Length: 415
Image (cartoon, rainbow, N blue to C red):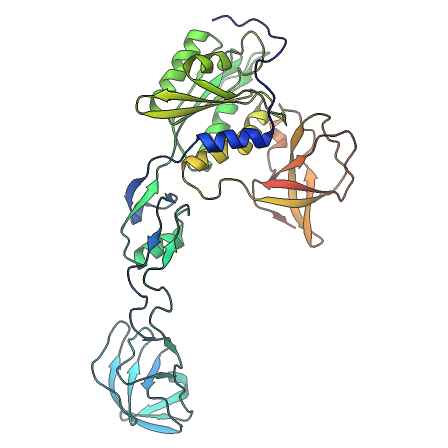
């Protein structure tokens, strides 16, 4: 395949919002699978989890103490029995009797109050209570934690440690979840060498492939294939086909601009359908998104730009939300907050720019500081950044203190 040098792109320039809509409407969640709750950590629920019964199923003691009938004190009561956590008894209390009860013990018949052990004295099976127990004191009512039929976990929730505990609590030992997307990452370019090699003049180490693989893993995916191919149509096409045969999503880096060796767009058009190929966005204007039919399923492909920063920023803004949508997340985007600029910023004249920055709490609000020169090859501008500032296009400088939106990609710095 020979691609002549082009002076104009066949793809219309679309907005960030249009590109996001295109990705989110086409990339539907993967078919759910069933897993043991013991192995469900990190997955996203594909169905609501509903409590089959009240929890607790009966009134229980919230403290160690004595189960009694509420009445004016002081009281001297005969202790009939001891109820430990999880136990219950059929013995019925009267006004002159009590039962020793531990936290979690089922309140015995007739009792309607629990007196804390700290407020009592017991000797020879007689407990002395100086206070007047009130109805309901220290009793956890039936269903106070969870009521029968209540949705305790909603579809779209990521299963974390507390969700695993909730599944165990309600006895949901098998659960439907969305599988992790299988991702393939392909680096392209004649000038790319492995990180272990010393690159000759004009060559670069392959940072994109490893950074994108790490980003896909952090986003909850399984990287099932990775490789590098030179800018030769036959080799590139074969690598793309090998990757698509085993992956739900193929992510390439490089080869999406308009040079004679930029072959990814023509190959994607040959293999499937390109949905967009240019975005009014900096850095990463030539980002490409396509769908490709595979036996019994649809696979997706993202052609990322070749510069390291462009590759990672386009992943963050577009690819990561798409991958999270495949996983069934109810919330696919990074948190978006308003931040104050710590110093002046100069906008790009024609495109919305995602500027790498560090956001910290300062003076009771969020303040953003640039990570420095924002050239697309300068990956150090990503190192330590915890935000992407959405700098609107325009000519006028943004002064310090201007409020702008930002995507939080990491923890907020607290000095």
